[in-house]
Every structure is written in structure tokens, then in C-alpha cells.
Length: 514
Image (tube, rainbow, N blue to C red):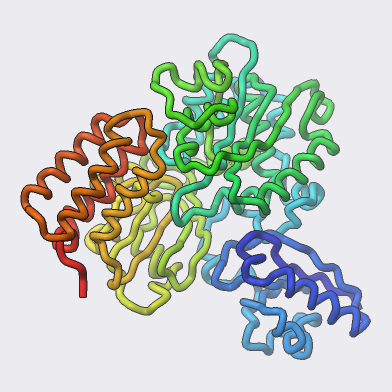
């Protein structure tokens, strides 16, 4: 008897005991004389079900989860190897799990499906198809496709990706760079990690396409040091891509050239800001640069540089393979394509949800997230990382769209959605925003460096009931100063969560909830 079983190998699954499940599965198969093909696939992004074990059958893959090592014997006794589903952990066909079935996966179509390190697997699922087409296109044609797709930066600023590429493309020929910002530091985000752990060739392909588009022959991935599994898997994928001729000189016999390296980050949130990242990549302390000049004109080592987030680059292979219009057909308004949303915090079903722009926060949190893990009522949700506004119930029916969020001072950012139930102290959350900035500021500009420290002090006085009205006015003025005077988004956006608490939860700045 021969059977193929999939056990994920990403960070989340490993944290939940996936290695022990895989080892127990091998031992059980040996004891029963079963020829086991154990594939360490990536996660499907359904984190509340990890480790999610799948079994290949003639009718597709069947899922079981969350599986512990202690569950393996009972699963096998119930017919796991035969594809039987008479077990409490049986979930039926994987593709029919509602959480997964209701998604629109373009960028994440392969995660959990393939062996992350298998180039053959990647190619079987249309991997490198976009690159094969692009090798016969001019750089301008590639840039035009990205512009026509409507793709915007998925790292926070939502700047049109194609316009950034056009700027670098139009700079005189010479040394140019592609830099991938994989310093994923926003609270509640993990999509970048999933790309690098579960579908690493996707990022390799996307960065190579960027290089072909703008005439750059060298790329760097700036990876946060807290991602050792991503570092290991992606580094191995890089080596295999070189061996297979997808990187280096004469890519697939085309005469084109692109090299790619990984550099570990400095452990600082500010290095997620593109100019601070470039300083760190050059071996300096991560400090925000004044702009202009833009990195697209004078970036890494003073040369024209494309700096894009992982998700921006990972969207490009689909666009080159399926066409710009196929991507632009998803979304709403000026927000085209799909966004990998990440549900975290006090949520019953946390994980990755890739959907076209336009779904509301309420639909996302209820239909996918299933509400809070505690079962208590939702009180607030923070979208866009630690610098994003706290949104009250009155804003949950807003469609997830860059312009719709900007209209009320919200940010979509990297797509992180952190949920809070009614026990959260919003005054403490406001204080945390200022404290976070005071710790993570690079210190280059006064409004951020000093303003955040003073912000903590003012909120502490408010919490103590001291001169409440005077300190409210002072906090409001301080927020305005930071927004208008800071050199980058670190200081400029720190007031967003504070102002949202002042507006929607004003009493909690001075009174702790009971």
C-alpha cells in the first residue's frame, strides 16, 4: 500500500507540533508496512486548524485538523491512509472547507498545495510561466503590464507599483537594484512569511521580473531576523533556483542576468521604512533619509532602486502569466486585484484570507474570523499595523479599499487585521502607540523622537485624572505636530491610533473600563 500525506512545515505549524506529527506518522506507517510519501508542504493559512494534515486520494486531498501527534494512531485506525473521514478531526475535501473555498487566491494559489522547495511542483502549478513570457519582452512591456494591472504597493503607502518601476526604468542604463522589503514588523501580519516559507519561488520569480523590467541585475531580500524558518527555506530555494538556471547569468538560455541575495534585518521596526532599510542594507544604522531624492532615483549605494514589499513583488508573476486585465478584473475603484488579509488578535479562526478589494471588515471578521476567540462582543479592530487607527463598530461596514479607508483616517497597510473584544482598555492601547514609537523611532527628527515620549507622559497624566481638559488639548496638538512635522510615517502615523481613541473611545483615556 502506498499513500501520500501532507504535513505543513511553516512556522505556525511547527509551533503547533507539526514535526512531532510527521515523525509519528512515519513511525506508524513503518509499523504497518505502508509505503508513505510524506510531503512537508506549506500552510494553507488556516491557522486555527494547524497542523492541518492532508491525504491524497483519487478524488482529491482530504483534510484533518488540528492534528496532534497523539491523534495519529486513532486517525490511522479510522482509515486515514485509505482516505476515510469517520473521525472527529476529519474536515472532508480540503478545497471544500468554507474558509478556503470562499477566497479568491491569486498570489497564494499554491501555498499548502505544493512542496515549497520543489521546482517541479512550482512549474506544474504555472510557476515561472510569467518569467518564461517576460524573457521575450522588453523592459517597457513588462512595466506597462504592471501599470495596466492597477497593482499598488502592498506595504503601506499603496503607491502604484508600475509608476515606481517606470521611474527606475527611465533612469540611464547602469547599475540598478531591486530590493524586497521583507522586514514584516506590523502587528498581526504574516503574509510575507507565508510567501517565503510556503512558496519561495514566487518571490524569486517576482524579483527577477522586476529586474528584467527596469534593467537591474542585482536583487536583495531584506528579511527580518525573527524569521529563521523563512530564512532557511528561502535560502535553499535560492540555491536550487540557481542550479536550475532561473537565477544568475544567462537565465534559461535567454542571455539575461539577475542575481539575488538575502540579508538579515537589524531587528528594528524602523527598518521597514524603505530609506531606513536601505541604510541598514548598506551596513549603516537604520536612519530615515530625507526625500527627495527618491530611492527610485538615488537608492541603494546611490543607484536607482526599486523597493517593494514581498506581496507587491509576489503579485507580479500572475500578472505576467495571466495578463494585466485578469488581475485588474478583481477589486473596486482604484484598488485593483486581491489583498492577502491576515486575521489575528482575539479571533476564533485566525489565518490568511486572500480576497478582492471590496469585502467589508464585518464580513471578514464574522464570516471568516468567526468572531472573537473568547466569545465576547467585538469592541475594536486595528487595521494596518501598530500605526493604524482603532476602528469602532460604526466603521466595520466600510469596504476594504484604500480610498474608503483614507476617507476616515484609516489605513489598509499590509492587510493586518487585529481584533479586540469588549475587555480591551482603549486608553492603554492609545498609550501603547506612543510608547511603541518612542522605542522604535530612529531618532532623526524631533517630532517623532521627542513627541512620542511626551505623548506617553500626557496620556499618563490623563489616565491619572490630572488637568484632563488641558491635557486633552495638549495631546491633540502633539498629534498634529507629529503628523505634520515628522520625517516619515513612523512619527507621522503614530497619532492615528491615538486620535481614533480620542474620537471613538474618549472616556477610556481617563477611566479604565470595568
